Amino acid sequence: MSAPASLFSDDLISPEVQSSLPEGYIARPLQRTDFQHGHLDVLRDLAVVGDITEEAWVERYDWMASCHGSYYVLVFVDTKAEPSKQIVATGTLIVERKFLFKLGLQGHIEDIAVAKGQQGKKFGVKLLSALDFVADKVGCYKNILDCSPENTGFYVKCSYEQAGQEMHRYFDAEAEKVGV
Amino acid sequence: MASADALFSPNLVPAAVQESLPDGLIMRPLQRDDYKRGHLEVLKDLAHVGDITESEWIDRFDWMVNANGSYFILVIVDDSQERGRIVGTGTLIVEKKFLFKLGTQGHVEDVGIIKALQGKRLGTKMIEALDHIASQLGCYKTILDCSGTKEHFYVKCGYEKAGTEMHHYYDSEAQKYRV
Image (tube, rainbow over all chains, first blue to last red; front, side, top):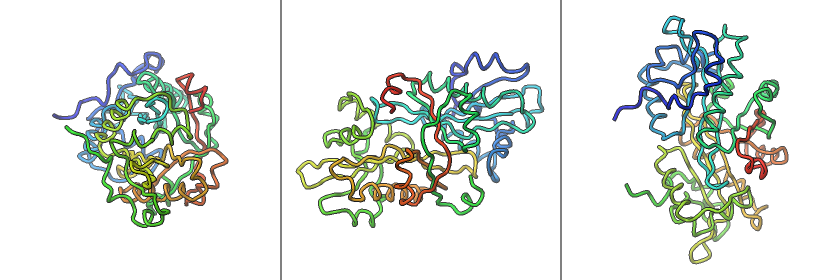
């Protein structure tokens, strides 16, 4: 059975965020053809991406789709842009299943990126709001994310509060060098 | 499809950590019958667990088995009793990304050792084992969140300060219990 065209259901897109986007822009789940719409270029503004073929990208998409409601990658699309540059923002919610808190679900927000040249449209705030909507709808008891100390103010505006300290340990020297 | 008895292959458990455990304790992957060995009791020392039946516990275990190699729960078991009793637990979640050449990032969650056995470096050994698994599976790094009081412990485990954890609650009971 081949993977679905869309990573998750449109029902999980926040109507409030959708209607708040400027004309010509839409919020939607990642789609299987989105390599062609510039998905990786948006991520390149966030962190090292490297060389990834379309085939490898699709394989990763298919794997995420097979993870039964674990990966929710949400994008904003400029429908008026040329096809290879249509994706202008991306964010990921991973839904972790736990044993504690009555077999609770904890959301992890990862890889929030807005394309350069799209500043001033509050896309970061709206992307968080859209991912929070998904998390709430699928039954997460909370979301967590990690950010640099200088960005905490932004996430407070998105209704997050400081919770603790992120710690990390690198296993890959190149990753450590580029600080991914 | 019948679910595996062990959440993942015992071959991933580092021999060096196994051998370093005190007599009577072993480290292994979570097993399908571990509800009976008190897995949830260890978690209760860590955070609010609530009422979970054995059948529900097994459903969650089976879901994790089928999660495409994403969940790695290690337990430390006191094997000196007939059935064995779980005295420690730790979880590694393996996240697959698009960035960093379709990189893999580890997340350490829900690490707990029962009060009676704290102070014997079992927590350190648990982190060492989870890190070994993360590295074996190709994670470029592992991240975790902790309170300020636990920072020093994780620094001793080879971690360094990275950023700030932020959270947003949807469930008022979870917020009340600070889960």
